[in-house]
Length: 66
Image (cartoon, rainbow, N blue to C red; front, side):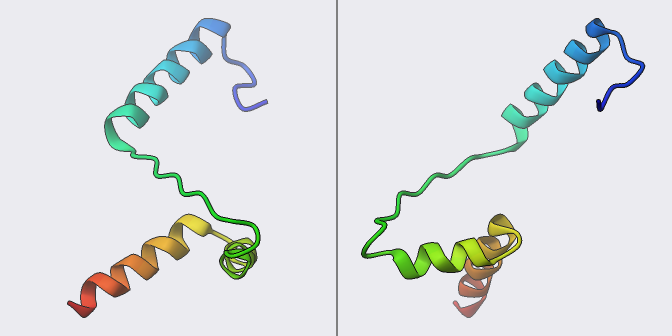
């Protein structure tokens, strides 16, 4: 358990703060891929250890080209 000695109230406060921070600072982006026509892309994404970092690196590399 992450909060081994924490009270239920403390855990709820931490979750609330975390959710507020996430809402303020994070943006989720979802894409849909076709299992047939995008199978190569899906396979590549499944092969990397961190999809978010991999996609970020690709986008930044593209941005730096311009």
